[in-house]
Length: 336
Ligand code: SF4
Image (cartoon, rainbow, N blue to C red; front, side, top):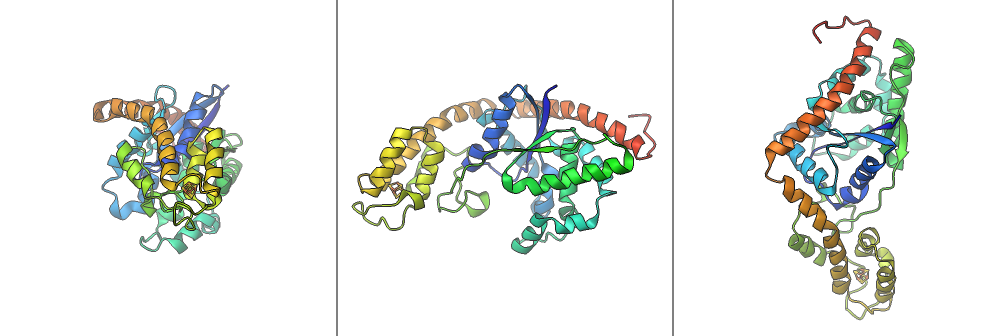
């Protein structure tokens, strides 16, 4: 039996090289590993939770993210790729789980508290935002996924899903839902062009869909070690975000050694260092751009991929809900 893996991303705009080096490269690796059976969802309900006041682009962003996923090498034949709202059982199971989720669990959720404190330009004091871990649990549990790829810092979320399973099964029957385990995945540090973490909201990202020229213009203006004012000033790569990008995107260890040494001795200038980085990034992006061109502009093909993904996902979701309704004492709809 293959182990089932569930992963999702919120479609909130174009994805960037930080996503590519982190979550997306893990998506591709897991998909290629014969021991896993992966389900990949574009979590549009989750996107609405924080962007409900500006939701008009959500559907379009599903296409944007799908294109980025296909461009980096996700294969829709191998794993269903689908939009969360196209499988209505996500919302149904979230409602069912909401019946047994104590409010205290949600108020104690550290991400909820952190986001309410830090995001001041949106009103997040909504029923849905408080309850987003319930929908997140439903996403995973619907597919009886045994593994969920998470970074070390996200394990609290998964713990809430696991507690939900225990409480739900305790009420309605052991074995009804499966406790998911974390599959810890490495996410490298990828800074944006201003040195902060690469993020769409900071406006510092190199997007997967960006042209080679546009990427180079951004890299050229990227911040470096601030002490290197003149070409003859020695630098310190350990405090330079360009060096952090070399560590992720430059596969040539000999060249990296040479650059680090050249930086410390002023043997290499920052423009040359950035040119070398750019060459590696463009080499990596060439097949990504080639794959993207195959799908771009072909809405019919993208719709077919999403329709097929939702059909395969729903077949599993319907089975799960088919055992949950009677276990909860609900009358099963004979027409479904
Ligand atoms: Fe950064 Fe490279 Fe300049 Fe050193 S040479 S400061 S690593 S950009």
